[in-house]
Length: 498
Ligand code: AHR
Image 1 (cartoon, rainbow, N blue to C red):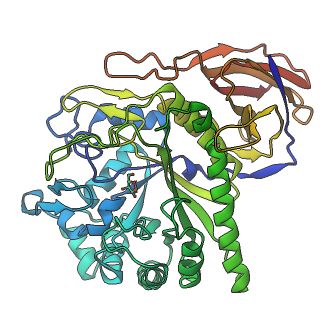
Image 2 (cartoon, rainbow, N blue to C red):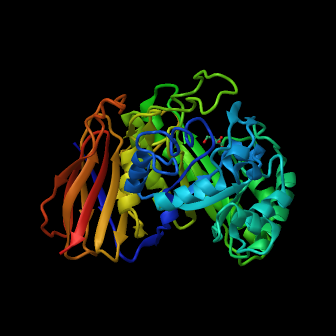
Image 3 (cartoon, protein in one colour):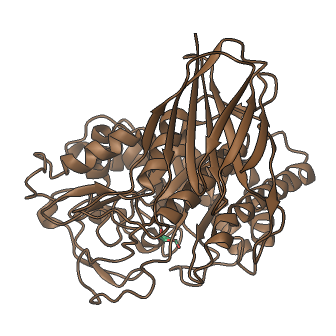
């Protein structure tokens, strides 16, 4: 048995967690929209065609913000195609994913769906094949009350009140040559500046997100952020990061250590943002939006029919190992919540998603659903600097990897503390002693865990073995509490004041 020591204090705070870090993402890709959130004719669809079974799972997680409509899709999207009478909407070749887009679902359907899902929209504009003019028109369509061409067009589409969308992405992954309208950092920085300028002139209350690198492994990483940000610094509020992990080589030990790379990526982007801030003698602080993150590799290479509508693509079936990595990614996000204010698990339904559906049939929770649910439910409050002494190991790509990773969140309002912890060790239990001296009267009352599964165990529509177990805890106060973390486990230890 191994041992770890954790100390938390009310005085050592990282930041108040912005709930938007528990956001997600819906792209017009595969069956995320069609057959995912929207399926008229499904036995559980409501009068607008939204699947109630999927809405119920999304509400269970409590997703505060959803990015839309892409992703790579947005870089060729004409938003006008997706508004107005459905029968008149054009069918288009969708070049990002080589499918056909029917446009039966568009901006107003998405905004109505957001209300039912109890979430907010994070809208992306097309800076690939289009630019500032279309971007400002979309802001006018969505956010201007009325009396102008685009606001009245919205009203003529039956939407009297403006949508009031606050957060806007300035394109998507513009650094990647797979992107429609791929740009150099300088070209993009200028385009983003002009688009954001016009969008904010239409509605000064909005916030904008600049596309950072598509991954820290891009050859232009670092330089991309510095060059583009310098060209639009005062017009943007966030820089985006995208990060997906894979275990294609089957080395799970190394896979579980990859969150060290995410931590490093976040800290590097913070440094670049602050370098530009310093260089410009600016008071404006840029925050980060990790607006695509997840595990993604199971579906690589899966074939589908070109130009088909809503095909089965990117439908990763997640296993228990993936759930542990997602848990570790959430811990990493919380550790960096002083600068990461928005994050989107990519994506939400069917496409690399915690929720899967069958067309005309069931909806179910994948393994990764659970750490996401727990973090969203119990990770709201003040993230505490969690002083962690743990044994370490090396993996193929990383050295000094903690056997345990952990982070505590204090919810001052309901007087609870939640410790999120992963034991990366394959064989040994880890006994954690948590120093609670600064939280007199806080008693442990439950330990939720995902543990004891085969690393390859998955949930399907017919069988869902990977589910959390909740064990009651003693409920008595002691300044140092001990908890056992099973080998290869995700743990949520909850304490409340009595
Ligand atoms: O989330 C899937 C895709 O991954 C997105 O469309 C793109 O932005 C990223 O490369």
